[in-house]
Image 1 (cartoon, rainbow, N blue to C red):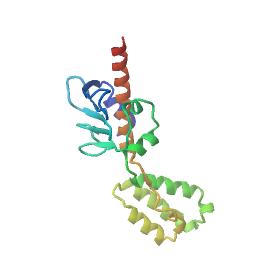
Image 2 (tube, rainbow, N blue to C red; image 1 turned 90 degrees about the vertical axis):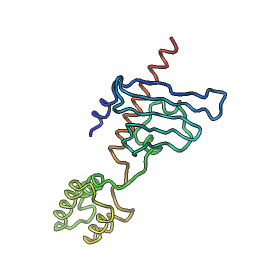
Image 3 (tube, one colour; image 1 turned 180 degrees about the vertical axis):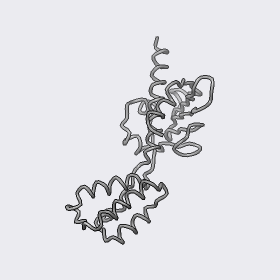
Image 4 (cartoon, rainbow, N blue to C red; image 1 turned 60 degrees about the horizontal axis):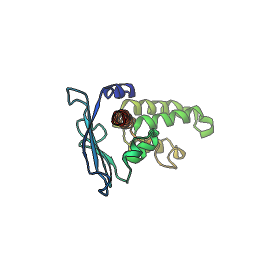
Length: 193
């Protein structure tokens, strides 16, 4: 799924406040449900506690059952514009992403002379890139072994390439954040009138 689809899936959501312990309670707990009117499809809840922000519900594409930011972050923080990499660093874990490893190796092949890659290894490395793109279950261990077998020790000196945030998880997290931000701002404007 691409990010445009993810954003469109959440474009018509409405926000309902589930509870609010109020300013006097410390830590303050506030919970919201966001869903499409008339359906529970792509619905989710966002809970702000003194212990983190937790997102759960039908729309938990990142981790089944829900996921969260386990450091103290507030409703005000989540309501702001946040860069995708910063938001991902708070909610997600990095893992091996074969497509990211393929992209890194392709970049190295563009500078093959700088990397000291012999001409006869370039087709083999291109085949490895194709394998990484075709097989989402390709493991970091398989890639490590393939690169070591080719004598490409310099490719793994700092670890196996491809460790990053899953692009689909980042896309859904950003779509959820933008949906919440939009709905919360609209509800705040109505309550201030």
